[in-house]
Length: 325
Image (cartoon, rainbow, N blue to C red; front, side, top):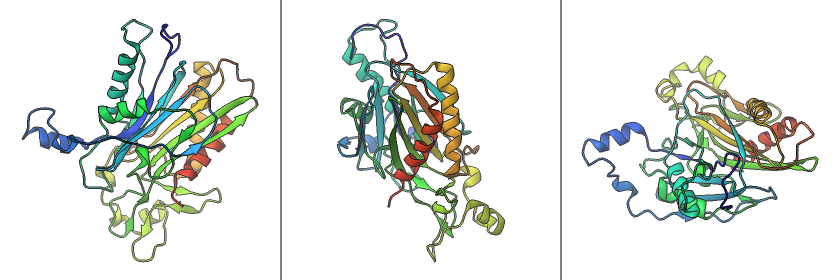
């Protein structure tokens, strides 16, 4: 990492899970502030395998707690990056993993000079729907993922932040949610490379390019799937937890462009790519979702061609790669 002050923002974006607020409040009433016994003695497990690709300017680290299961991904940009955020859901969250990443950056640089302090942006999914533990990714897990960051790899499926993710979370007795996960897709546009990385923890279902429901809302007795609009129309009594689960459903996405893109242009391209994901995710950006997309530019050479169209198709590919086969 360069020792000189950065001229551009340097986010290390993490995606992970956070313990349920109501559970934390209940624990605080019985123990001193900060005493979380379910976090004691946990050992970060580093995920070394994953999809391989060539995307300059970024190193990615993934760490998990098997006791959750839960995990996080850290994207580190050693040479800096411009970052814009498109938050579309009605209930975005923060997370403790970012604190661990920030501490590692501070320790590595050994200086506190304005312009040289690494900035950390992050988002989280609420992943307690499919498990009964209180374990969440804290500072130690974020620090471990940061130290393990390497270029050119990303684990897909039920790994990292996507470990316990689910799709079709409506609290129904008849329609059960299915396994979610995380995915990625990397492609070229001219001389530039674009990578899209996403974590799916959805209220809505996942649809293929022909409009067929691919994942979510499975009938427990038959194994068939039904779109949410069908459930709302014919089985409204099954929408048990929807009204009380704001923020429990989230898609987190990072779009990384190996090219020089001005902030205003990057922001608009990110919005276009984020909107395109609604072809696969339905419904998307509801008041109950914490959907957020980080758009990042890492290159020095000006990107001459429009990247949003290519990025939109890669975003769909990333969504489908997250779904277990």
